Length: 115
Image 1 (cartoon, rainbow, N blue to C red):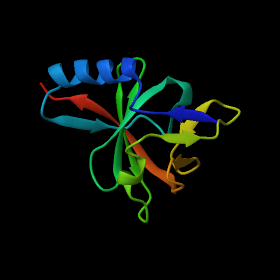
Image 2: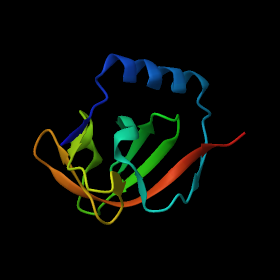
Image 3: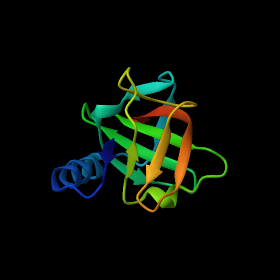
């Protein structure tokens, strides 16, 4: 199992750095269906069905959860079962919250700051 948590101190510092320079608006761009699972260093809920995944290469990814899912269940982070390819993929992989909730990722998009 891979655990992604917003509670680690180095992750909080990284997210705080991003927030200081973060613009108010983002553009969403297609990036395919998968991201490297081990590069996810933090998570934040941003709406009822959306999570922002922070990657170690400073990219931000919007993960839209399935229709019956509630992103607030994942505010303490999540667990995921690693696949042989090492990727977290939309339409395939399931996230498990610490409270026991499970949810499939419906779509992923990269968030790119607007100048």
